[in-house]
Amino acid sequence: MAASKGDITVLLHRVAEGDRSAEEDLLPRVYVELHRLATARMRSERGGHTLQATALVHDVYLKLCRSERPWQDRLHFFRVSARLMRRVLVDYARQHHALKRDSGRQAVPLDDAIVISADQSFAALEIDEVLNRLAEVSPRQAQVVEMRFFAGLTEEEIAEALGLSTRTVKRDWLMARAWLHQRLNRA
Image (cartoon, rainbow, N blue to C red; front, side, top):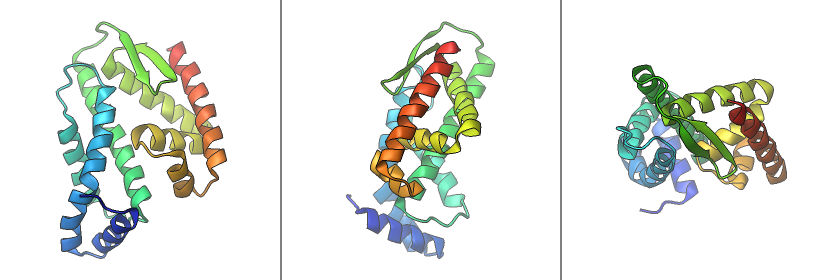
């Protein structure tokens, strides 16, 4: 079911007002996009990962529904979704890493421009750590990376969500990728 960006925003506002029927209408309209994002993120995870994209979507959606946060719009919803997916995957990686320390290492792509050497679960932890460090240096660049990599938003959507020009977002994305590439290759 294809829904316009405006339809989703209207439903999010109705959900915030306590409209239960809007909550029921929302899931089918955002599920496909959430599943696409989860599938893309799961491709970056280690082979044989026991967490499936569908389970990730359900976990994230339940957390989103329990949130008392008022949704500003569709972009805000997907930005928070991306952050939650990141947290779920990092928590899962921490659990897996605690069980299986220092197993064989392999290359893991983070976007086409960044490649690191690490076990997949270790990579998720390392990416999270490096993104947190980037957030200390440049919170806006960290937001751009999170929205681009984890939410799959376009530069135009990110610009709209953050109230920036597309050119600024492109510059932030390039600088952040270079910064991350440098840090991740050191590791």
